[in-house]
Amino acid sequence: MTRGVRRRKITSSIFVAFCALSVLLALVPLAFVLFFVVSQGIQSLNVAFFTHMPAPVGEPGGGMANAIVGTLILVTLGALFAIPIGIISGVYMSEYAGTRFASLVRFAADTLNGVPSIVIGVFVYGIAVLPFKQFSALAGGLALGVMMIPIIARTTEELLLLVPGTMREGALALGATHARAVFTVVVPAALPGIITGLVLALARIAGETAPLLFTSLNNKFFTTKLTQPIASLTVQVFAYANSPYQDWHRQAWAGALVLVTIVLTCSLLARFATRRLEGLGSSR
Amino acid sequence: MKKPENLGFRLGTGLFGLVLVVLVAAIGAELFRQSWLSVQKFGLNFWRTEVWDPVAGEFGAYPFIWGTLYSSILALLLAAPISLGIAVFISELAPNRLKPVLVFLTELLAAIPSIVYGLWGMFVLVPAVRAFEMSIPQALKATPFFSGPPFGLGMLSAALILAVMVIPFTSSVAREVLKAVPTAQREGAYALGATRLEAISAALYYARTGIVGAIMLGFGRALGETMAVTMVIGNNAKVSLSLLAPQHTMAAVLANEFSEADTNLYLSALIEIGLVLFIMTLIINSLSRLLIWSMARPMKAPVSAVVPAMESAA
Image (cartoon, rainbow over all chains, first blue to last red; front, side, top):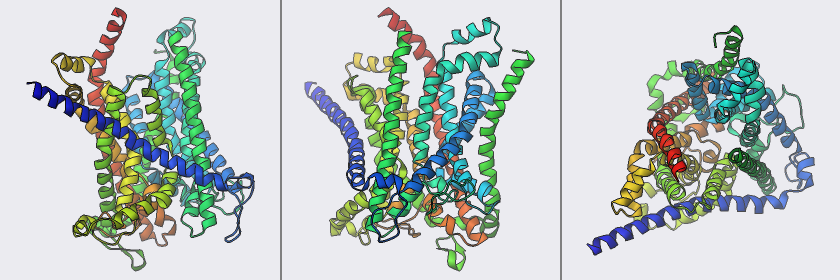
C-alpha cells in the first residue's frame, strides 16, 4: 500500500516536472529570438537606418527610410478601412448578441481570423491588383485591413459585453434612443479597452509580410503615391535576408529589431493599460 | 424595440456586420473563379501529380500538400504535449503571482512577427540543425526519416519553428478550456486521496473535447504559416519522408512563385493551391471552434452560477 502511494507520488512529481519543463522549453526559443534580434540588430541600427535610403549593393551603410514610411502608410490605410467596419460590426454583435445573424457575423469574424495571411494576399491580388494591372499601396492597405477587421470586431464585442447593463438602461431611461445610448454611453465606457485592442491589432498587422508580397510588392525608391508599389519593413527584411550580401543581412536584423521593438512596446503598453482598467473595474 | 429609429440602428450596424460575411464569401468565390482554369484543365489529378515544372507547363501540387501536412503534423507532435504542459502549469500549478507573467511571456511568443522567426531560423536555427544533422549516427541515417545529406534547410527546421509558433495558440486555448472545468472535479479527486497528477488527469479528462479543439486550432495555424516556413524549409518540391530533406509547402510556394507566375495557367494553378489551403483551414478551424465551444459553453453557466455564491459565502 505505502509502496503504491510512493509510486503514485513519484509519477505525480514527474508530471509536475514535465509541466515546468514545458514552460522552459517555450521560453528558451523566446529568449534566443529576442537575444539574437537585439544583439545582431543593434550593430547596424543607427540614425541613418531611419533617415537614409537603401544603399546599392557593395556600398556599406544606407537605411530603410522608404520602407519605414511605407509600413506607416500601409498600416494607416489598413486601419482607415478596418476600424469603422470592425468597431461597428462589433457593436452589432454585442447589441444583438442572441440573434441568428449576430452568430453568423461572429462565425464570419472567426473564420476570417483563421484564413492564412497569404490567402488574403491572393484574394486581394485578384480583386485589387489584377483588374488594374498594378501593384499598389492601396492593395497592400486593403489586405492589411481585411486582416484587422475580425480582430477589431471581436475585441470590440467582448469589451462592450463587459459594460454593465445598468449604464445602458440608465441612458435609455433618460429617453435616449438605442443608437444614442450605445454611442454616447456604452462605447465610451469601453473605449480605453477598445483603444488598447486597436494598438495591439496595429502592432500585429505592422509585422505582416505574406499579404504584402504581391499586393504592395516592394519599391527601391521613396514614394508616398498610393497607386504605386511601396516598400515595407517586413518585405524589405525578407528581400535582404534572401540576398547573398553580408551588409544586407545586417540591415535585415536591424529591420527585425525595429519590428520587435514596435510589437514589444505595444504589448507592454497594452498590458499596463489593461491592468489599470482592471483596477478601475474592481474598485467600481 | 419596434420603433423605427431602433430598426435604423439595427440595420445600420448590421450592414457593417454583413461586410464580414460578404468578405468570407468573396474570398471563397474569388479564389474559385481565378482557379477555374486550372481546376478544369487538371481536375483531381492536380493533387496526385508529383511533378511541378512551371517552365514545362507541368503542374502537380502533391509535393506541396504533402509538405504542408507533414510539417504541420510534425510540429503538432512537438507542440501539443508542450502546450498542454504549459496550460496545466499556468492554470493548475504555478503560484498566483507567477501566472500573469507566464501568460504574458507565452503571448509574446505569439506576438513576434513571422518574418522575425524566419530571419532567426535562417541564420541561427538552420546552422544549429545542420550541426545536429551531421552528428546523427549512421544507424539512424539508414532509416527513411533521416536519410539524405544534412542541409539544415529542410523539414526538421520547419517543424521546429512551426512548433514554437503554434505553442502560444494551443496553450492559451487549452488554458481557457481548463478554466471551464468545475473546481469540484479536482476537489472531488483530491478528497478521494488523489495525487496532483490524478486530480489534474480528472480535469483533463473532463476537458478532453476542448483540448482536442485547442490542438486542432494549432494545426490550422500551422497549415497556413508562411514566412518563417518558407525561409527554412528549403523550398524544394520533392515528396520525401526524410526530416533532412528540403521540401515545400502550399503557403511557401505561393509566397515564392506568385509574383513570378508568367502564364495564366501557372497563376491559376497557384490560386488553386490557395483555394484548397483556404478550404482546409476553414474546415479545421470550424471543427476546432465547435469542439471548444461544446466543451466550454454548457459548463460556463453552472460555474458562474455557483462561484459567486461560494465567494459571497467565503
